[in-house]
Length: 265
Ligand code: URA
Image 1 (cartoon, helix red, strand yellow):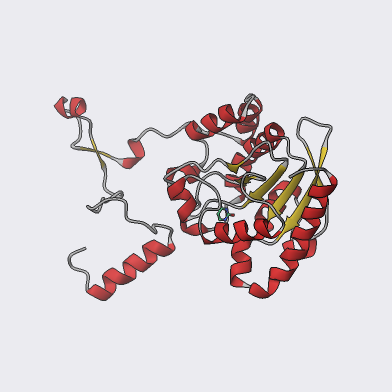
Image 2 (tube, protein in one colour):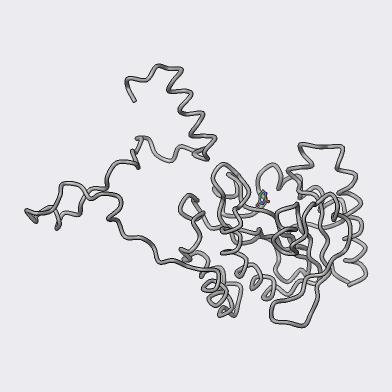
C-alpha cells in the first residue's frame, strides 16, 4: 500500500466504499486476503505449515431454503424467532453486517410495515428505519396519526446488504420463511409494503408504480386468514423524488381509512 500515490490510494478507497466497505471499525487496517494464522497448538507440530490457506478454513453448514422454512416454522413466539435469527448463520449477508435488525415498534399494533433491508444507520443501531429514510417515514406516519407505538416495522432481510444494494433473490429467499413466520406471529390486521423489494418478494408482483395504492391481500402461510396489504413508495425514494410524495400521501390516506374501519389505533 505504501507504494501507492495519494490519488491511487484515494481511488482504491473509493472503490472499497462502492463495494460496501463504508465504515472503519478499527484503528489498524486488517488484510483479510492474507492467509489465516494457525492456532498455537498447530504451530507446535513440526509438519504444520506456518499459515493455513484460506481454502482449508471450515465452511459454515449449507442452509437451504427448505431448511430455513422448516427451522422458521418451529418458533412459537417473537422473542424465540428473534433469538433464532440472531444466531442464524444461513444468510451470507450476516457475514458483512454488524447487527441483526429484527423489528421495531409494537407487535400488537395490528399494522405491520415491511421495508427492504437495513442501511448503515440501522446496521449500527440494530433497529429498522432509524436513518434519514426512517425519520421521513416517522413524519409520514405522523401525518395519519400513527407513530412507532401504533405500528410494527421490519424488513425483507435482517442484515444490511453491502453498499446498500438490493438483497439478491437467494438472500431474500433464505430470509423469507422467517418473515412469513414473523407475520404469522405478529398477527397484523393490515400490511404496508414500502417499495418494490417487499412487493416483489411477498406478492410476486413487479413494479411498485403500477401496484402502489391498490389493496392486495396476503395469505398467511399456515393457511386461512388473508390480510389486506397496501404497497406504497419507499421513503428513501420519496426523499430523492419529492414530486412522488403526493402519491404516497394518497396511499397513506387509504391505510388510515382501513385502520379506522378495522378499529385499529
Ligand atoms: N430502508 C429500508 O428499507 N429499511 C430500513 O430499515 C432502512 C432503510
